[in-house]
Image 1 (cartoon, rainbow, N blue to C red):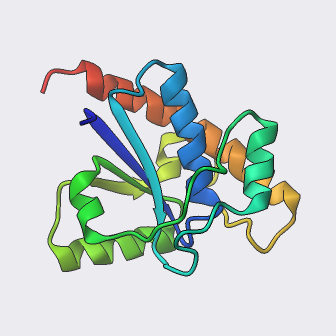
Image 2: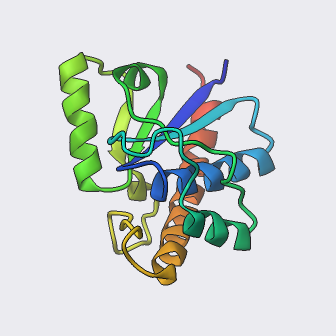
Amino acid sequence: MADVSVLFVCLGNICRSPTAHGVFQQMIDDAGLADRVRVDSCGTGGWHVGEAPDRRSTAEAARRGYQLAHLRARQLVSEDLAEFDYVLAMDGNNLSEIKKLQKKSKVDSASIQLFLEYASQQPVREVPDPYYGGADGFAEVLDLVEAASRGLLADVRQRLESPC
């Protein structure tokens, strides 16, 4: 069992959250922390359950050396809120949906927040959904995800190093 667990959440789990999943997993692997940190992603909606990430997300990620093709979409469930230390929403709407589920399930253990809170140098607070836009939207998502992932990695390292 991992010491720390991180869950990325967007709407359908085919663009933003699998991108964050793939980027952060690579950073965890590169840091030699794969045996101590569990990474996953999901969506608040269930439309794409079982599907691979959007081909545009996969292609843009591959251009930067990240692999997403093996990931499959799943929907957020109340058990996730008890299992994960970090539950990171891509935008305010998804954050609201997560908090509704938290209230309904009465689970209060996860740290639920916007993912971009870990990208303090970024002027935006939400990762925009690139689904209905052009290729540049997928590149922007990756820029934001990489910045926030670096901040998150620092936080996770600190958590792993601090005594319980």
